[in-house]
Amino acid sequence: GDSVTQMEGPVTLSEEAFLTINCTYTATGYPSLFWYVQYPGEGLQLLLKATKADDKGSNKGFEATYRKETTSFHLEKGSVQVSDSAVYFCALSRNTGTASKLTFGTGTRLQVTL
Amino acid sequence: GAVVSQHPSWVICKSGTSVKIECRSLDFQATTMFWYRQFPKQSLMLMATSNEGSKATYEQGVEKDKFLINHASLTLSTLTVTSAHPEDSSFYICSALGQAASPLHFGNGTRLTVT
Image 1: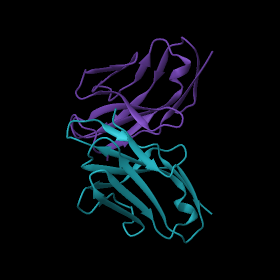
Image 2: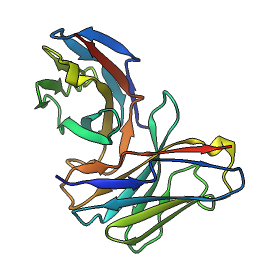
Image 3: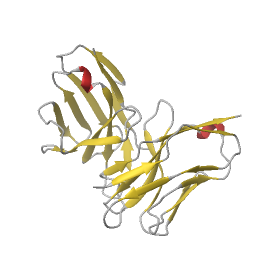
Image 4: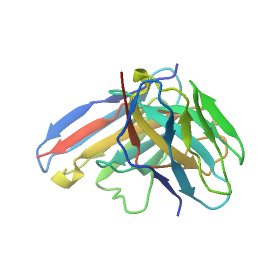
């Protein structure tokens, strides 16, 4: 079945450091890929998505590129801020464009310090 | 923006009792709602898909008689954990989908502890 594997956390970085959170997936066909973020005390929010190979999703300085050849969707940000501290979830869905039935990774906690 | 309210945010109950968790879409009509369960350091696992006015569709391995889901209106779905046991202690999260191409909106989750 479908699965998503993401790097274990927590990831601790100093402010302005470069961030990479790895995510790989296993799925048949052509899934859509997502990154969700959960800030402390809040629900999950969609951060970015990509619906086909070589698409790049971007939002709030975060980027991720859909790499079908490596079945990856790594999340990157060039310069993190303390306000980026949260849990990040990689997910996939087989319903193109919608996020109706998601398969999630385990989440990676990011802690950014001054 | 669209908001999903989940209530309660945490609940402690005794073994054998039932607990009801509510999930409301506050400013949009949710034709479909999803219920997830998350164990510590594990993924969110989809438990069931709930469509307004029809029976929920449960994922394999989820006991429908234990986790009762009702989606009586376009803005409310409830999950009732019946005869709760300590192994049901977990973090339960709902999400709601409006129109077909709209993003999925999540509630803040409910931490259930069964003693």
